[in-house]
Length: 380
Image (cartoon, rainbow, N blue to C red; front, side):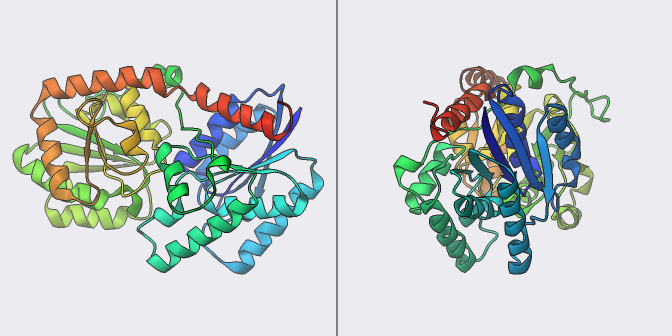
């Protein structure tokens, strides 16, 4: 039995989905799992944590938080050190930047091999000032020196690790995110009637946290152009986040408030995808976006920005469309092109679904991570 401590601070969005896939996908007869999390950002994660407990996984909730606060971070580090001192773990697997740094440092003190999954490099985040981004990169290089291996979730994330000299190639193992295709396609879809939409309306959907990363400001600018051509068009923004009040004000200022619906946080966001004529993800950066993978697997015509992660999933003009990030003009043009061509939408959606069948099954990702665990624990 291999004992693994999985550590995550950001218990929300794609990072929580990634953790859930591993916890529920790894064989409990081979791996004894303990999950250590902070809930400062993701209080809604309790339902997932209960599922973990029902599977026999030990769940520990500690004082980790997103903001850099030296005394609070020291407290979290000491908590993790205590967790490691009380347990006999073979591997520590840290996820995302805050837990990634603290858990790897604690693992080093305890003499336990550590793995790290970035789930999106913080130093690529344009929300942060250049000086802070350089600091984040320096911290990643520092922690990378004593990481047993780093597991990027996309080829783009792998390449960024090389470009920024985070770790040498022999420490990098790409374990691309996947999805449970059968469970996704078994969800009961919402209908337009349930949402008060008509069959002939143009409907676009985006799913994600309402934060700067997701590029919603640029999407709203572009949507004003779309509404000028399609006066009954509706954009559904599924997911909540800190930027929502500003986005609501922006939509109102642009005169499109009646054409934008803020759906908020929902338990099964992919249920909204079948009502969409197209799915759009205007992110400024990504790791490997689950929402885009889900939309492709459900055969939705997809439009995304050409950032790492998204650009790796979409073959432009074949399985979807790509436009430059932070470019509302290009985004509007692509939205209008897709809106006006039902045949193109059908072709892109069918190609995306077929590609998802070949490339996006989460079982591949879980099997690869399990193999890494075995190797690190000396079982191969």
